[in-house]
Image 1 (cartoon, rainbow, N blue to C red):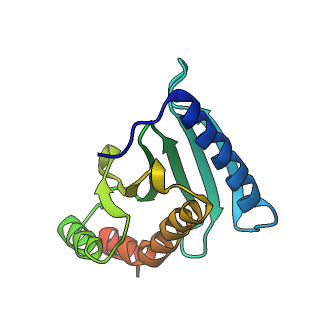
Image 2: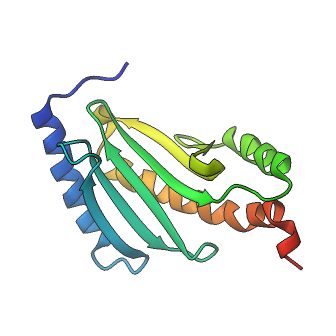
Length: 156
């Protein structure tokens, strides 16, 4: 189990993430927006969203949620497939084998997400860059192919 950090240490991580994301966005034309909120109104976990312009997918949004032990991250990939669901899920499971620090998951309303966790002890600017870059690159890589399988009748 990863270390449990005190509230002040988590707040320090949050300030560092704010700084790293601001630097990441400065002059980066891919970044459309960065925002921060608390998960719950009663002083919950800090949560950021990083919205990026893609080539294969118009926008890719990454959510980062800072807990007392880990930074959880996820990106929405696509809605639930309307057809060929078995092929879509088989494709995702096969891709999971080669992913490092990420995995495909079925989320709310059966949508497809990429998710992962990073222990706070390993969190630094390079790791945050790797996480965001991996979510972006993997979504760009799989998006069109998965759409063509899961919504095949909509494509000529």
